[in-house]
Length: 204
Ligand code: GRF
Image 1: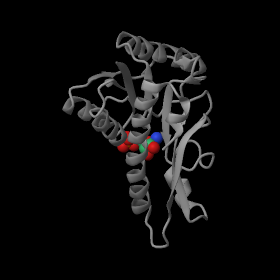
Image 2: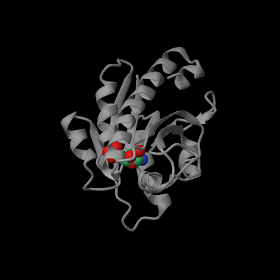
Image 3: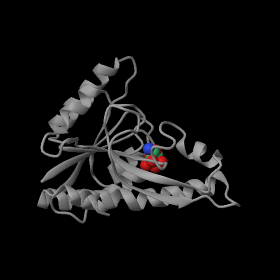
Image 4: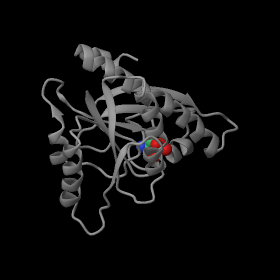
């Protein structure tokens, strides 16, 4: 059994999509949800699906102390893979190192970013993509390295920006794609873990 944790800071719609998908697999278990925000919507999803959750706020802790607390919780749940789903803090190299997979030559930490990377890294990606003079944006799922949305790309797909779009409609279209792509990556991870062939993880 491979234990997965989701780290999320907000609404948790991607977490929900992952939780629902994981029910299809016998060898993958979403064992823990960690949030740094006591008001995060993701807590409700954890409760609804009887998944352990931990609220670990940064408050006056240093970044290192905060990450240490998260790490202890992850390790106590025997977590092997992490999916970031709207987690709003950049993970430090020391944290990422703990989840480095020598065989896989990547961290076992995956993130979803709402833009066609390397375009629009960082915060407010939907807003900036919408304001840009282009008729598409995209969604990217990638491995996490120490940079801001810079790790190796697993999959990315474009979606269109229409002439009559509002930011709201545009975001909704993107989010629908997020909810399709992220569970698909989970499915591929499940296959990869069974077969240990790295190409599987990328083949969508
Ligand atoms: C998503 O747009 C995700 O791509 C970004 O943060 C947002 C989180 O949304 N990293 P949700 O909490 O999964 O609903």
